[in-house]
Structure formats: C-alpha cells, structure tokens
Image (cartoon, rainbow, N blue to C red):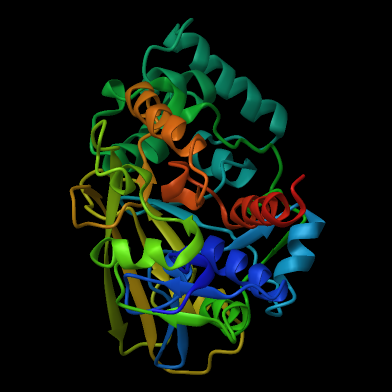
Length: 370
C-alpha cells in the first residue's frame, strides 16, 4: 500500500469535507468506506426519476452564512421549506406546534386564547418539578397536545414508555403563536438540486476512495501507511469496547414505488399514534419541484432497538452513556495520530450544518493550528 498523509475513515459529510480540504492543501489522502456507496446517511439515489433519501429525510438548514456559502460551492439549493404534517388516527395537524395546530386541537383562534388554554392545562397538571419526559412535555405544552402529538411518537422513537424516559430528552418543544408552518427558524433552507450524493462526489473528486472497505478488517495495514487518521466511525469500537458499548437507537426503512402520482401530498407525514409502528412516511418527490414522473416513491421509517451489526443512528445521550463516552474521549485526547469526528466519533447527534462547522473547525486546527 502507498503512503498517505491522511486516511479518512468514512465518507459521509464530515469525512468528505476533511478529505476535500486536505487535498486542496496538496495532501495525499485515502478515503475508505465500509458501505457500498459514498455520502453516508445523506446518500440519495435516483429511483423513477426521483432523488430518494435512502436513510431518512434530510433538509438542509442553517443560520450560519459561512456554512451556507461553503455548501453552495458544491450544489445549487432549491427553495424547499420543511412543513411536516402530524397524523393522529384520521386527524391531521401542522408542525411545528403553531396557531394552525392550536385552532384544530384546542378550538382557539387568537394567540391570546391559545396561550390561555395551554397555561390552563399546564396548571391542571400540577407538575412543579418534571421527573420524566411525560411530565416535562405536559409542563411545556399541556395534556391535549402531549397525548396526541408527542406521547406515541416519542415512545416509538425511543422504545420506552414516556414516563420511563428522562425529562432532558425534551428540554423544549417548538411552540409558535403564529400561523406559520415552516418548521425551522433558520435563515437558509433547501434541498440540493440533483441530490446530496452529487455534493459528496464533487468533494471527493480526484481523491482515492475505496468502498466496501472496512477499517477494522485492514487496520494494521492502514495504520502503518498513513501519517494521520481522521476517524468518523464509532469511538468505542475503535478502542475494542474497552469500557463497554455505547448505546444507540437504530432505524429500518421500507421503500416502495407506487403507481400513483401523489400519495400523501407532503414530503413528510409524522404518525404520532403508538399503534402505527412507523414514525413517519416520506414521499420523496415533494422535496423537489421539477419531478414529472407519474409514479411516486415513499419510505416508511421504523425505529429499532440497536444491536451490533445495525446502523447507529441516534446516540442515547443519558448520564450513563455520556459518562462512558467521557472515558473514551479521555483516551482520544491522548492520541497523536488519530482524530475522531462526526456523529459516531463524538457520540453526538449533529444536524448537517453543525457537521460542516465541526469539520471546518477540525480543518483549521489541523492545518492552521488555531
């Protein structure tokens, strides 16, 4: 094997950005990926002329102009606005919780009436110090909203009863007293025209990439032939689970091609009823505005218990796991040749804009030493 300045393990957004920036600085880079494709969880694949988000809906949003300008080097973004719909049985509500939601759920029209109704429900619950997620949610938005739009969805997502979950999971719930269905408050928002995979392809242009290539199967050879390693895989696995396994929640996706033009009328519909096993259905063609196919592609998203061999999607950042991660972090801090980054390397869930921020911070630290 050749000698490389940098080995990048994992070519999702974080790894691809570092590889791109290292190559710009004339560094010799090898990027490897255990999957059979680049782009990690933001991978999009063209099916029936539709860019399908293979690992769940990814809507880019940020208020950081530096991040927005950076990602726009690689793609033009459309004007997609995230306005998900929540379905409880046969009832439909706008998300995030806003005046449209309150009108349908609480029978109110003005913000003043909505606030009064929610405060009345919060007082009736008589919760002074929330001891679990259920009490925390009720103390924030009242019982009606909690029971229809929070309880079932959350219990499916985490695989536990809401009154068994810690309150910190829902530190706050987005509540808006305007008739505005835009989920994000960020200044910049959209979907890359042509899909996310094209962004990563441009970043990796001219860089040696090996797919279906597991770091742990070739570890000794790889470590001997790279001056430094950027590792975006699970930090506990890198250390052979020395202190134990970090916990995650996983997901399963079922994608179907339907012989109809429009299945649900919206890109994302959340199913908040516990009896429905999936948390949402994504209809991918609604992310874009120029899809002319008479067919449509939908994906049902099922939360799953994580176990080895399944993809790690959501870190379980409770006290036990955060304490365990701190032990691995202490080991990482003493490393000279390896740097951990990204969702799995840092055991933290990141939105895409935050991934870019963190990757560029690493680039600055690595090459500018600031």
